[in-house]
Image (cartoon, rainbow, N blue to C red; front, top):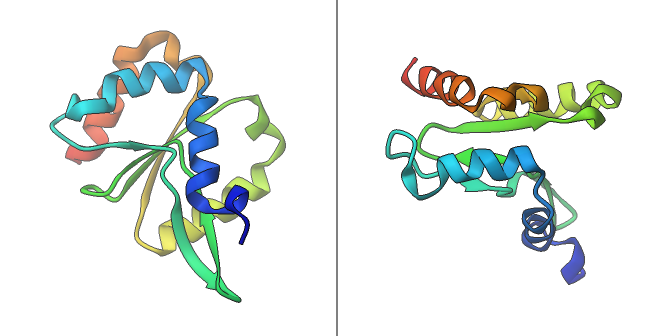
Length: 122
């Protein structure tokens, strides 16, 4: 597998191109700022291997302690609903929970953080 197509190299590229909403949420999650939980940004989740090649997804944010993925859905997600549904099915089948936010919700970051806190407490 070439270096450009490894899960880690893809994740590194995504980290360099974070959206304003991702940057805002990361500022509020990093360094265990939310309930002392460790979140990772654009962390590859390998769910299968085919012909020695990992099959993986790279969620926006991941908390291993809570097996939680946080996704921020921009306009592109309006055009890839089937892909998102299949991806969510695979991830939930391996025991992960997913919470999604639309870009517009970040106009009220306090409400977003409250929803995440409620989700991890529940």
